[in-house]
Length: 155
Image (cartoon, rainbow, N blue to C red; front, top):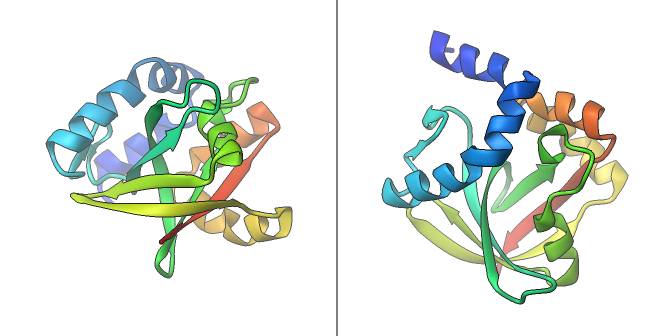
């Protein structure tokens, strides 16, 4: 593992880094990801596995796109939200609960997916790999007290 990647993984646990990521990272990552066909995010070139998740807003009915870290499970994508350790929930898990149809962009490929919230046992099974991909997941979960884990299966 490169020194840069170790540094990024270390930064992920810092509260100030989570605040900056929440405030600015998502908007910047959307732009960088789209412009580079998924090769670049604010964390660098393919430092951690990131996809763009597009949901339908549960109230606005508008498309909402957020960068989300993921792991693969066969053809499917497993994603988890602890909302950077914030006390309030991120919107995208609530949007998926209201309407499980989503779009996922990985690299330059965009696929339609159906989301399903994982049971606690299923989420526990994937948790070690999610934390391995982005160790700050564990820190964020401890701070927020919540975990919202979904599997996104291509249609």
